[in-house]
Length: 306
Image (cartoon, rainbow, N blue to C red; front, side):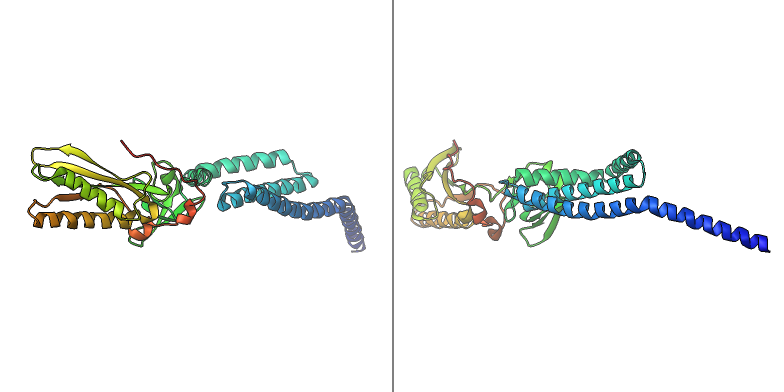
Protein backbone atom coordinates (compact mmCIF):
# COMPACT_ATOMS: atom_id res chain seq x y z
CA UNK A 1 0.00 0.00 0.00
CA UNK A 2 2.80 2.40 0.90
CA UNK A 3 4.52 1.63 -2.39
CA UNK A 4 1.34 2.39 -4.34
CA UNK A 5 0.86 5.67 -2.51
CA UNK A 6 4.44 6.63 -3.22
CA UNK A 7 4.04 5.82 -6.93
CA UNK A 8 0.83 7.88 -7.09
CA UNK A 9 2.53 10.89 -5.49
CA UNK A 10 5.46 10.60 -7.86
CA UNK A 11 3.12 10.38 -10.92
CA UNK A 12 1.14 13.36 -9.69
CA UNK A 13 4.26 15.48 -9.24
CA UNK A 14 5.47 14.46 -12.68
CA UNK A 15 2.17 15.44 -14.26
CA UNK A 16 2.21 18.80 -12.46
CA UNK A 17 5.78 19.44 -13.56
CA UNK A 18 4.89 18.65 -17.16
CA UNK A 19 1.80 20.85 -16.98
CA UNK A 20 3.88 23.71 -15.55
CA UNK A 21 6.43 23.26 -18.31
CA UNK A 22 3.71 23.30 -20.97
CA UNK A 23 2.10 26.35 -19.39
CA UNK A 24 5.40 28.20 -19.40
CA UNK A 25 6.12 27.04 -22.94
CA UNK A 26 2.74 28.06 -24.42
CA UNK A 27 1.85 31.00 -22.19
CA UNK A 28 3.62 33.46 -24.44
CA UNK A 29 2.02 31.84 -27.51
CA UNK A 30 -1.43 32.11 -25.96
CA UNK A 31 -0.83 35.70 -24.90
CA UNK A 32 0.50 36.55 -28.35
CA UNK A 33 -2.49 34.87 -30.00
CA UNK A 34 -4.94 36.86 -27.87
CA UNK A 35 -3.14 40.12 -28.63
CA UNK A 36 -3.01 39.20 -32.34
CA UNK A 37 -6.74 38.46 -32.38
CA UNK A 38 -7.60 41.79 -30.75
CA UNK A 39 -5.26 43.79 -32.97
CA UNK A 40 -6.43 41.91 -36.08
CA UNK A 41 -10.09 42.47 -35.26
CA UNK A 42 -9.57 46.19 -34.70
CA UNK A 43 -7.37 46.51 -37.81
CA UNK A 44 -9.94 44.69 -39.96
CA UNK A 45 -12.67 47.05 -38.77
CA UNK A 46 -10.56 50.16 -39.40
CA UNK A 47 -9.33 49.05 -42.81
CA UNK A 48 -12.83 48.03 -43.92
CA UNK A 49 -14.12 51.44 -42.82
CA UNK A 50 -11.38 53.22 -44.75
CA UNK A 51 -12.07 51.00 -47.76
CA UNK A 52 -15.78 51.87 -47.60
CA UNK A 53 -15.05 55.59 -47.45
CA UNK A 54 -12.60 55.33 -50.35
CA UNK A 55 -14.91 53.23 -52.53
CA UNK A 56 -17.88 55.50 -51.78
CA UNK A 57 -15.96 58.47 -53.18
CA UNK A 58 -15.63 56.75 -56.56
CA UNK A 59 -18.21 58.17 -58.92
CA UNK A 60 -20.81 55.68 -60.13
CA UNK A 61 -20.24 53.09 -57.38
CA UNK A 62 -23.52 51.93 -55.89
CA UNK A 63 -24.02 51.75 -52.11
CA UNK A 64 -24.69 48.00 -52.25
CA UNK A 65 -21.51 47.40 -54.23
CA UNK A 66 -19.44 49.52 -51.83
CA UNK A 67 -20.67 47.54 -48.84
CA UNK A 68 -20.02 44.26 -50.66
CA UNK A 69 -16.38 45.11 -51.38
CA UNK A 70 -15.97 46.40 -47.83
CA UNK A 71 -17.19 43.10 -46.37
CA UNK A 72 -14.90 41.15 -48.69
CA UNK A 73 -11.89 43.14 -47.40
CA UNK A 74 -12.95 42.71 -43.77
CA UNK A 75 -13.53 38.96 -43.87
CA UNK A 76 -10.38 38.37 -45.90
CA UNK A 77 -8.36 40.10 -43.17
CA UNK A 78 -10.11 38.11 -40.43
CA UNK A 79 -9.28 34.84 -42.21
CA UNK A 80 -5.65 35.95 -42.51
CA UNK A 81 -5.56 36.77 -38.77
CA UNK A 82 -7.10 33.40 -37.89
CA UNK A 83 -4.53 31.49 -39.97
CA UNK A 84 -1.71 33.51 -38.39
CA UNK A 85 -2.99 32.71 -34.88
CA UNK A 86 -3.03 29.00 -35.67
CA UNK A 87 0.55 29.33 -36.85
CA UNK A 88 1.49 30.55 -33.37
CA UNK A 89 0.63 27.10 -32.00
CA UNK A 90 2.66 25.23 -34.56
CA UNK A 91 -0.20 24.36 -36.90
CA UNK A 92 0.89 24.03 -40.53
CA UNK A 93 -0.74 27.01 -42.25
CA UNK A 94 -0.06 25.58 -45.71
CA UNK A 95 -2.43 22.68 -45.03
CA UNK A 96 -5.05 25.09 -43.69
CA UNK A 97 -4.85 27.24 -46.82
CA UNK A 98 -5.12 24.14 -49.00
CA UNK A 99 -8.16 22.99 -47.03
CA UNK A 100 -9.81 26.41 -47.32
CA UNK A 101 -9.13 26.40 -51.06
CA UNK A 102 -10.69 22.97 -51.50
CA UNK A 103 -13.69 24.00 -49.39
CA UNK A 104 -14.09 27.17 -51.42
CA UNK A 105 -14.02 25.18 -54.65
CA UNK A 106 -16.66 22.77 -53.34
CA UNK A 107 -18.90 25.60 -52.17
CA UNK A 108 -18.42 27.37 -55.50
CA UNK A 109 -19.53 24.30 -57.44
CA UNK A 110 -22.51 23.77 -55.15
CA UNK A 111 -23.58 27.43 -55.40
CA UNK A 112 -22.77 27.96 -59.06
CA UNK A 113 -26.14 29.54 -59.84
CA UNK A 114 -25.95 31.81 -56.80
CA UNK A 115 -22.44 32.96 -57.67
CA UNK A 116 -23.64 33.67 -61.20
CA UNK A 117 -26.32 35.94 -59.74
CA UNK A 118 -23.70 37.71 -57.60
CA UNK A 119 -21.45 38.28 -60.62
CA UNK A 120 -24.44 39.60 -62.60
CA UNK A 121 -25.44 41.83 -59.67
CA UNK A 122 -21.95 43.34 -59.53
CA UNK A 123 -22.05 44.05 -63.27
CA UNK A 124 -25.51 45.63 -62.98
CA UNK A 125 -24.35 47.84 -60.11
CA UNK A 126 -21.18 48.90 -61.96
CA UNK A 127 -22.63 49.49 -65.44
CA UNK A 128 -26.05 50.60 -64.13
CA UNK A 129 -28.33 49.93 -67.10
CA UNK A 130 -31.16 50.86 -64.73
CA UNK A 131 -31.53 52.59 -61.37
CA UNK A 132 -34.02 52.47 -58.53
CA UNK A 133 -37.28 54.12 -59.61
CA UNK A 134 -36.88 53.48 -63.34
CA UNK A 135 -39.29 51.38 -65.38
CA UNK A 136 -37.65 48.56 -67.33
CA UNK A 137 -38.78 45.73 -69.56
CA UNK A 138 -37.05 42.52 -70.59
CA UNK A 139 -38.21 39.43 -72.43
CA UNK A 140 -39.34 37.86 -69.16
CA UNK A 141 -40.08 40.64 -66.68
CA UNK A 142 -41.14 44.30 -66.53
CA UNK A 143 -41.80 46.80 -63.77
CA UNK A 144 -40.46 49.68 -61.71
CA UNK A 145 -37.16 48.90 -59.98
CA UNK A 146 -37.51 48.96 -56.19
CA UNK A 147 -34.09 47.64 -55.13
CA UNK A 148 -30.98 46.23 -56.81
CA UNK A 149 -29.33 43.56 -54.66
CA UNK A 150 -26.36 41.28 -55.19
CA UNK A 151 -28.57 38.22 -55.73
CA UNK A 152 -31.80 39.59 -57.20
CA UNK A 153 -33.62 42.75 -58.22
CA UNK A 154 -36.99 43.73 -56.75
CA UNK A 155 -39.62 45.23 -59.06
CA UNK A 156 -43.22 46.44 -58.90
CA UNK A 157 -45.32 45.64 -61.94
CA UNK A 158 -47.76 48.05 -63.58
CA UNK A 159 -50.70 46.42 -61.78
CA UNK A 160 -49.03 46.73 -58.36
CA UNK A 161 -47.58 43.23 -58.00
CA UNK A 162 -44.24 42.49 -56.35
CA UNK A 163 -41.75 40.62 -58.52
CA UNK A 164 -38.27 39.29 -57.65
CA UNK A 165 -35.99 38.71 -60.64
CA UNK A 166 -32.63 36.90 -60.32
CA UNK A 167 -29.84 39.15 -61.54
CA UNK A 168 -28.61 36.57 -64.05
CA UNK A 169 -31.93 36.74 -65.92
CA UNK A 170 -31.61 40.53 -66.22
CA UNK A 171 -27.95 40.51 -67.21
CA UNK A 172 -28.27 37.91 -69.96
CA UNK A 173 -31.13 39.58 -71.84
CA UNK A 174 -31.69 42.93 -73.60
CA UNK A 175 -33.16 45.58 -71.30
CA UNK A 176 -35.50 48.39 -72.36
CA UNK A 177 -35.37 51.33 -69.96
CA UNK A 178 -38.39 53.61 -70.38
CA UNK A 179 -37.22 56.17 -67.81
CA UNK A 180 -33.52 56.71 -68.60
CA UNK A 181 -33.74 59.21 -71.46
CA UNK A 182 -35.19 62.67 -70.68
CA UNK A 183 -37.31 62.80 -73.86
CA UNK A 184 -39.28 60.33 -75.96
CA UNK A 185 -40.87 60.26 -79.38
CA UNK A 186 -44.44 59.30 -80.23
CA UNK A 187 -46.44 58.93 -83.42
CA UNK A 188 -50.15 59.20 -84.22
CA UNK A 189 -51.29 57.81 -87.55
CA UNK A 190 -54.55 58.50 -89.40
CA UNK A 191 -55.99 56.98 -92.55
CA UNK A 192 -58.01 59.28 -94.77
CA UNK A 193 -59.66 58.62 -98.07
CA UNK A 194 -58.28 59.88 -101.38
CA UNK A 195 -61.22 62.26 -101.72
CA UNK A 196 -60.40 64.20 -98.52
CA UNK A 197 -58.30 67.34 -98.40
CA UNK A 198 -54.81 66.05 -97.61
CA UNK A 199 -53.28 69.48 -96.89
CA UNK A 200 -56.10 70.31 -94.49
CA UNK A 201 -55.63 67.02 -92.66
CA UNK A 202 -51.88 67.61 -92.29
CA UNK A 203 -52.51 71.20 -91.13
CA UNK A 204 -55.03 69.96 -88.55
CA UNK A 205 -52.52 67.49 -87.12
CA UNK A 206 -49.79 70.12 -86.90
CA UNK A 207 -52.10 72.58 -85.11
CA UNK A 208 -53.03 69.93 -82.56
CA UNK A 209 -49.36 69.27 -81.84
CA UNK A 210 -48.25 72.89 -81.60
CA UNK A 211 -51.22 73.83 -79.41
CA UNK A 212 -50.10 71.51 -76.59
CA UNK A 213 -47.33 72.94 -74.40
CA UNK A 214 -46.12 69.46 -73.54
CA UNK A 215 -44.97 68.89 -77.12
CA UNK A 216 -41.33 69.92 -77.40
CA UNK A 217 -40.34 72.58 -79.89
CA UNK A 218 -36.94 70.98 -80.41
CA UNK A 219 -37.03 68.67 -82.26
CA UNK A 220 -40.07 70.23 -83.91
CA UNK A 221 -43.16 68.11 -84.57
CA UNK A 222 -43.60 66.90 -88.12
CA UNK A 223 -46.46 65.63 -90.28
CA UNK A 224 -45.84 63.48 -93.34
CA UNK A 225 -47.43 60.92 -95.61
CA UNK A 226 -46.45 57.51 -94.34
CA UNK A 227 -47.94 55.22 -96.99
CA UNK A 228 -50.51 54.92 -99.75
CA UNK A 229 -53.07 52.24 -100.49
CA UNK A 230 -55.93 51.79 -102.92
CA UNK A 231 -58.49 53.00 -100.40
CA UNK A 232 -56.66 55.40 -98.05
CA UNK A 233 -53.69 57.67 -97.39
CA UNK A 234 -51.77 57.13 -94.18
CA UNK A 235 -50.67 60.41 -92.55
CA UNK A 236 -48.38 60.41 -89.51
CA UNK A 237 -47.90 63.03 -86.79
CA UNK A 238 -44.52 62.65 -85.07
CA UNK A 239 -43.58 64.66 -81.99
CA UNK A 240 -41.28 64.60 -78.97
CA UNK A 241 -42.20 65.01 -75.30
CA UNK A 242 -40.49 64.73 -71.94
CA UNK A 243 -40.53 61.23 -70.52
CA UNK A 244 -42.68 62.31 -67.59
CA UNK A 245 -45.36 63.74 -69.93
CA UNK A 246 -45.20 61.04 -72.61
CA UNK A 247 -47.93 58.71 -71.36
CA UNK A 248 -50.59 61.33 -70.64
CA UNK A 249 -49.80 63.33 -73.77
CA UNK A 250 -49.96 60.30 -76.05
CA UNK A 251 -53.45 59.41 -74.79
CA UNK A 252 -54.67 63.02 -74.94
CA UNK A 253 -53.33 63.43 -78.47
CA UNK A 254 -55.19 60.35 -79.73
CA UNK A 255 -58.42 61.71 -78.26
CA UNK A 256 -57.94 65.18 -79.77
CA UNK A 257 -57.12 63.80 -83.20
CA UNK A 258 -60.18 61.56 -83.09
CA UNK A 259 -62.50 64.42 -82.06
CA UNK A 260 -61.02 66.81 -84.62
CA UNK A 261 -61.53 64.42 -87.52
CA UNK A 262 -64.96 63.35 -86.27
CA UNK A 263 -66.02 66.99 -86.60
CA UNK A 264 -64.76 66.96 -90.14
CA UNK A 265 -66.89 63.88 -90.73
CA UNK A 266 -69.95 65.75 -89.50
CA UNK A 267 -69.10 68.54 -91.93
CA UNK A 268 -69.29 66.16 -94.87
CA UNK A 269 -65.89 64.43 -95.07
CA UNK A 270 -65.61 60.79 -94.14
CA UNK A 271 -64.22 60.36 -90.59
CA UNK A 272 -60.58 59.29 -90.49
CA UNK A 273 -59.23 56.15 -88.88
CA UNK A 274 -56.90 57.08 -85.99
CA UNK A 275 -54.24 54.76 -84.57
CA UNK A 276 -51.31 55.17 -82.24
CA UNK A 277 -47.84 53.81 -82.91
CA UNK A 278 -47.59 50.37 -81.26
CA UNK A 279 -45.51 50.78 -78.13
CA UNK A 280 -45.16 48.52 -75.10
CA UNK A 281 -45.60 50.99 -72.30
CA UNK A 282 -46.08 50.95 -68.50
CA UNK A 283 -49.02 52.31 -66.58
CA UNK A 284 -49.19 56.12 -66.15
CA UNK A 285 -47.68 56.15 -62.66
CA UNK A 286 -44.83 53.95 -63.88
CA UNK A 287 -44.11 56.07 -66.94
CA UNK A 288 -43.42 59.09 -64.75
CA UNK A 289 -40.91 57.26 -62.53
CA UNK A 290 -38.33 59.50 -60.92
CA UNK A 291 -37.48 62.27 -63.32
CA UNK A 292 -35.08 63.53 -60.66
CA UNK A 293 -32.91 60.45 -61.18
CA UNK A 294 -32.47 61.44 -64.81
CA UNK A 295 -31.29 64.97 -63.98
CA UNK A 296 -27.82 63.58 -63.41
CA UNK A 297 -27.72 62.67 -67.12
CA UNK A 298 -26.89 65.61 -69.46
CA UNK A 299 -29.82 66.37 -71.70
CA UNK A 300 -28.97 66.05 -75.36
CA UNK A 301 -31.43 67.02 -78.05
CA UNK A 302 -32.59 63.78 -79.72
CA UNK A 303 -32.51 63.46 -83.46
CA UNK A 304 -35.69 62.78 -85.34
CA UNK A 305 -35.92 59.40 -86.89
CA UNK A 306 -35.86 59.19 -90.70
